[in-house]
Length: 238
Image (cartoon, rainbow, N blue to C red; front, side, top):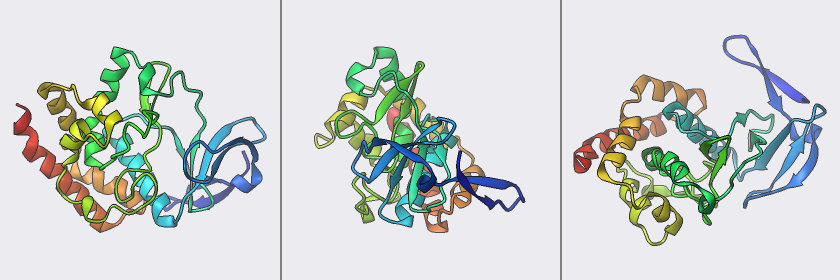
C-alpha cells in the first residue's frame, strides 16, 4: 500500500492512505466525489472527498462513536488528505434493507439509539441503502449524515441540539420512510435495550474518542448532554 506517514504522540508511525498513489478501479457510489481505489497488493478502498476538513472530521468522529458503542461500521483508514474519508472496501452480501431477513432487521434495530444519539437521520438511507450485511453481520455503511452535517453536507445548525428527539422521529417521521420501515415496529423493551447501549458508555471514554479524533470540546459537551437526555427518557419505555 502506498502511503504517507506521520507520527502519533506516542512516537509510533501511522501510515496515511494517499489516493494519488493508488489506481482508481471504480466510480463513486454516493453524492460526494469518490471512487474505489486499489494499491499494488490489490487491497481496495472507497475514498471520498468531502466539502471541507470539518465535514471529514465530523464523519471520522461519528464513526469512532459508533465503534465505541459497538455498532458495526466499515473500517475507516486515515488519509494524507485531511478532506478525504477512506474505508476499506468490503464485498457485501446485501446492500439494501429490502433484502434483510427478520434476524438481520433485528440486528439493525438494536442500534436505533446510537443513530439517535449521533443524530444520524440518514441511518437507513434515502433508499434503504445505508444498511448492509456481510458474513451475517449488519453494519451501517455511511455515517456522514451523523452529528453536525446532513447526508448532503448542509449543516444541521440548531436541529442538532441537546435533546435526542430522533428516538421518536426515526420511528415515526413520514419524511424518513425507510427509517420508519426499519425502526417503526420496535417495542418498548427493544427501544429501552437500545438506549441502554448508549447510556452505559463511560463519559471518560466518550471524551477520549472525540478528542482523539480532533472533535471539539463543544461537541463533547453536547454528546454528553445528549446521552443524559436519553437516560432521562428511559422511563418512557418501561
